[in-house]
Image 1 (cartoon, rainbow, N blue to C red):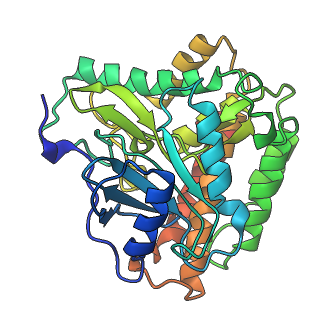
Image 2: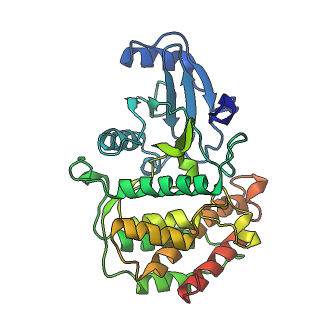
Image 3: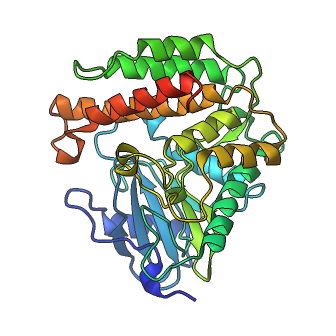
Length: 356
């Protein structure tokens, strides 16, 4: 049905981010002795968080993940934790790639890293790849498949999977509000709102009930892999560095903060990074209704989760802008991020008033 052009591809390795191919190859062949040939190393775009490479051997096709250079806070880039979490989750949640090797010895390539299988498929980024044209019914089928994957994750018995230790669990909701409030305050600049009323509202409206499950915390279309023969079928979920034990509705709130639908205003549309605007995609309201019906929950206090997702995203955006403002990065794409913070806080206030 599809050609190689629609598959997600890596490109040239960015300057300054090269791997020691000789040392890496020697180490890998000690752990995976069936590897044949020398690795063809390419790198995936992005990399603001962990750096991701493709290692194409004659006999195998692998993905390597490592933290960026200069990383000091291991808690934010813990390769061992990410590896072990996926390894344990694989049997209960088949959408996790198979883990192949983990290296804690930083002398091999200059950082801790792990290697996993490469899932050969389509990643739906801002737009579907050229050559993939779905009718509205097929697009709806894709949308439901992605949501069903999140629902499937939230239904995993984390105790049976041996994942009780990946997060503190109870009290997650309060910890998230306190944590993101602190991060926003720490990254505040003169040209963005104080956010104090939103933070106070979130603390004053903590839901009375907290559910605990495995949460991905970065679940978006561009973190799923689709079957190249049937683009409405999910075959994998990527980027597990933020996964923990948390509240499933907060995970959904995070997902919907990125969800741009076809009738959204210019500001939202200008930030779209996944194809949720296509005819056939569910609206945010329909997503909540579908998710809650499948999970058997009543979202009587959904405004809290909506505001949380939007505020969390505003803190992430502000942290990036703070780095630009203080000349820690010169990427011109970040120059106007302060405007998006204003917009996200406006969305928060609308939701707080029941107009979200």
